[in-house]
Image 1 (spheres, rainbow over the protein chains, first blue to last red):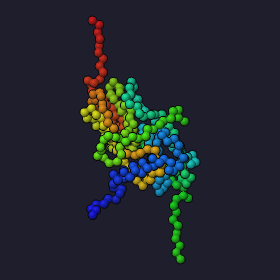
Image 2: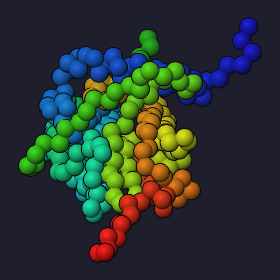
Image 3: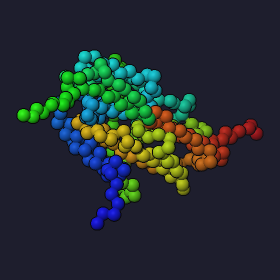
Length: 148
Length: 132
């Protein structure tokens, strides 16, 4: 008998495992959906999700100052650019250097039913989240069922 | 446009260690720079804030850990992925004598920045050579 049952949203462990499994599945099969994303392996890495409202792109841009980030809509294409400065103490010698700095730009071509011009972007803790809603005509619309 | 394309390393899972925390843990990319007075460390931990990071120095081993929050992933279904999501952890053997009490750190834009000042006795000392 189950004594306690929490709604799934209260179980961060199950959520983490489920999310990781789903992302791994996509990670291993990058060609499942042709989004017109080119430059896999180029900074910044992007994950794309779907929700009820449309698409959500999450890009890892650690160390990028928010004021250098630019997100632009060009028709169906979402363009993201910015600059990552790596601080270097004067007179220091490097033991490890695994991070790269400089300017970057990437564009992502999105499906036709999304309204790129209405996209909203938020930056938090080195992750840029861009929400792109579906066009109004692509939103689900309730259809009245007539009764005789 | 870019002069030189910035690339990313695919995240590597932490290996050779049993962890008590569920889910996958990845190795953050780091820069480590040494000056005569301090060691500086930067670790890329996108998604981590200052409340969800742990830094420990014990017996010459520096451990950094960061936990990511999943609240922003609620009701999202992945359709394309170039990076995996999970916590971060990495350990380093710190060779110079570090003054643990004076270690300073902060998290900014998903990067953990640490300054580990060297203990006085570990600093290079100039030895005066005098003519006889």
